[in-house]
Length: 495
Image (tube, rainbow, N blue to C red; front, side, top):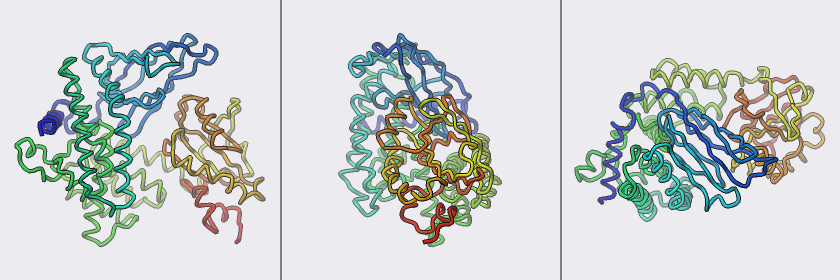
């Protein structure tokens, strides 16, 4: 109990200590930067390669490839706001808590990275926090992945042990053990100015998978009413009473909030209306219900706009105009309204029948391809990312898809676009492993244009004149199963 109370106490302090000037997140922290530098021994001087990391910003991760010099040195200034998680890709994924103004130095031997990895900061406090990040990776990474896998199982079958006391106990033990490492590290090495960031991440990282499962949350017995928990009162409070807008700076908390708010609103609509259909009327009703059941406007509006991207992908931008107009009239938080306008601007260009945005993709030899190169053929554009499991599952259907439409191969161009890769070698190695044929292309280095979609897989069908037939069109598995699908209709195939 002492570990739990300690963690809860720190989380309560985080509400006032993390971002004192903008406690309600009416505005985002201003963008600053950090410097990432260092040296990697034993790189190939002819092809030294790159280091890759992703900054977890409020509305999505921003990937940065950092070129290595022939001698293995590197340096790059990277934008960041306040304190945010950074995913560092070295053999695996390290999560670092990086602050505006940091100078982070990395050194390692390319041939023995596990034994030689060293990450240090520019002040004693930041150095010990960065080294704590590495320590948590070594001690908790595998356990975290295993627990995540177990927590996903009830999601696949809601009736399957949604109140499994053994599983809930594992969640509590994970968070307690994680917090114990943090506390012991501080006692041994000195003050951790951003200790709450570590604990918030641990706490909500596991609960993300349970956010939509009310039974599991009630069974957890870990407690939601933090103030009551600190007083030793039974932990049965409503989580809505403990929502903290300032914690939205943290990735795991954002993920939890998005799932939790969507679940609360959907279940409330089902109770009121008997169902929660995927249409404008139902979405507007959910938003109105949210005003009653989620009292904090910043939390509520963030969840609505975060979910809007998913709804657009499923139903299409044009089909959601009444709902988007409703949100436009009700969302008031400035930085959330700004994101909504960005979503509208980015998705309006994908309207069916409009000319597809011009593109400039490259193959492994550096040859450039534009829309004009495919004029007269339908383009089936498959935008995928390295380490995207669903992408890999769909790749298995490629041979059958090509076979099904073999007689039309002169009229279809299959374009496989790697929209996210840490370096050229990773892109090509993954493409070769999964047998990508036809046009195997990637975004040019540093590309920031409209095709930098970042949600994988995404499929777009473009007609012979370069106009959009359908954005977020049918996947290969769907094209194989459905008779009279969108591609059949475009080719005017009858079955």
